[in-house]
Image (tube, rainbow, N blue to C red):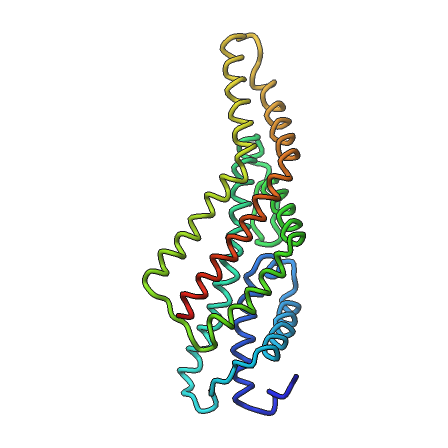
Length: 261
């Protein structure tokens, strides 16, 4: 398993594998969380790199006599591939948090913010709740295994030292990023429709019965309606996020095919 320590060329090849895996471990959802100690991330990267390095027999490139500048460029390219793989998954979590922000604003929780330990930023309490639920669903559907599988497939489709990014691939990446808003709309659809109907009904009541103080009555009503719909739509949220994960993995494989072309 540790035979590469006696061969300078194999040691350089293992370093490239380690850099690509490390880039993913520090940026991927769950693995790249700020609450996980960086030393643990490095340790996990080392373990995964060892498994991949010993499982693949296609790492037969010669780096012993390569130019130093070219070697540094190759290392940066491997690190960027890992970072790109992790960030594409991180955008799924950004979409869910974005949807939670919109739901919290509609429910009247726009100023009720909490600290997100993953990103060290202030987000809505509803967005944080959605984020926690999403992490649990992510682990329940095997999202962590999906990312590890993506790392393994990455070395098959994008060999070490190879990185091609044609012009048409930019449009593909932009299309993936644009799906953040569509994912957010899918997630907030039940709450958005319910609160829209609630606000419409309260507006009609305010016009028909001016004696009712609609601000006092409506504020707890929209909070109760929003929380009720969120609880009832958990199964819907699970199904949507599972489909989104499957779609993400397909897009990731397509991107790997483009980069390895």
